[in-house]
Image (cartoon, rainbow, N blue to C red; front, side, top):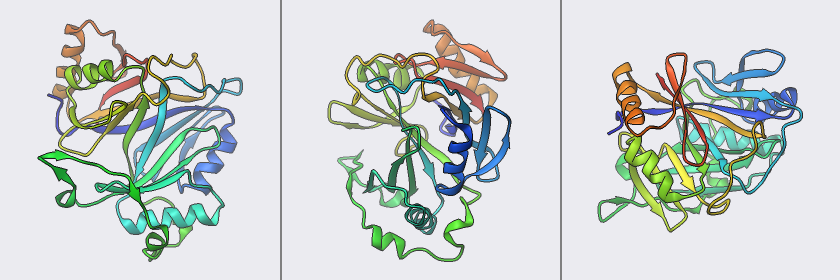
Length: 280
């Protein structure tokens, strides 16, 4: 139902200290600052903005709520992922995990405010694991020494490749059933995989997932208080005005409140996660 050309755009976060966060994302993850004012910085890899950081010194840090689990930086090749790993090692960033998901290889960490970050590269789609016609992403160990051996060409400090994008976002929600109704039945994403009773993954255009949804913060978890550290909103990019208009009509028919923001629509899922639907 959703246009197959739909992808994830920029991630917007509230952080406590802008200077500190900018230094972290530049030095440890290879981002470039596109522009900056006193309270907000727009970061990326030299093209579209991928990450927008807004400072709020008094923002509370809360646990056990809905919101961001992690956002995922998709690099174009295994060599790029190896360079990202080398940069993290050389700047003493502690990984929270690393996994071979069958569809991708991924590194996991947190920024200085506790926001979850994944860096990953996709495997060729022809090799993705399917069982009985259904995608089956796994979580096998990732050999980090083997990955580091892939480093070549540009050094660790070369920054993110220009074709780096935000590949997906993974959210804490209060109810998987409510989340599935919103993202699949209403917005029209395809359900790609269920992960037991506590997570599911949805996408457009046959991708392994553009949005992950889980109840790992607790079934019935409340939303964070306004202005808390974490996700402000994320952008879903649609390829055309008609694609956005079709989604807007489904929201209107379901009586889902939507606020016009520029040429896009700001909506909230049942867990109060904010989504800006926009034209790419």
